[in-house]
Image 1 (cartoon, rainbow, N blue to C red):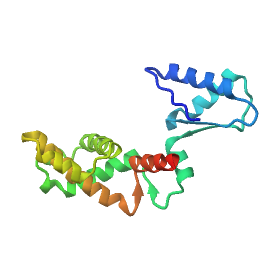
Image 2 (image 1 turned 90 degrees about the vertical axis):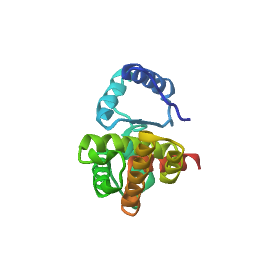
Image 3 (image 1 turned 45 degrees about the vertical axis):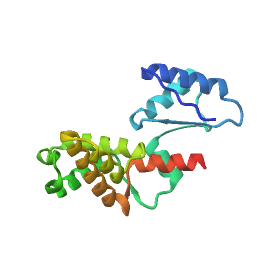
Image 4 (image 1 turned 180 degrees about the vertical axis):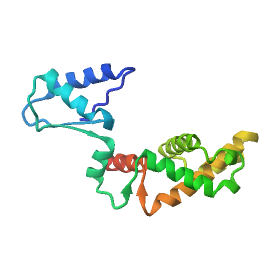
Length: 181
């Protein structure tokens, strides 16, 4: 059974998670907790303290990146957000002359950060460069130009990572497909 805990505060979600593990921590049970990488040690400590455990072999606390790396056994090198941002900056600079709207800001790292987040959301929602181009054709002005640029950068980014790397969005898609099968 998969449980997802969402909350406006991390404290509320953490409390619900610990309560749920406490209720279901019976002999033979297994618990997998996927959390942000900078929160794993703190969460593990909280779970053990609140449940009065000295240690446990049935509660695994890991980050999404570590879990997907173990579970999916990558052929390609996984890259994190920072690496993906640098690749976006690289391909945007290479495609600067083709861009209609963003050509003035491609050298700014903040642009690359925002663009990678946009590309990731597009990919996670099923959009590819061709779909974005088709949508852009129905738009006007700056919106059309921005969508066109996003399609150009997305296509170049995907070509850059295709043979060598897996980014966060690709790993999430692979993990989703594996869980569904």
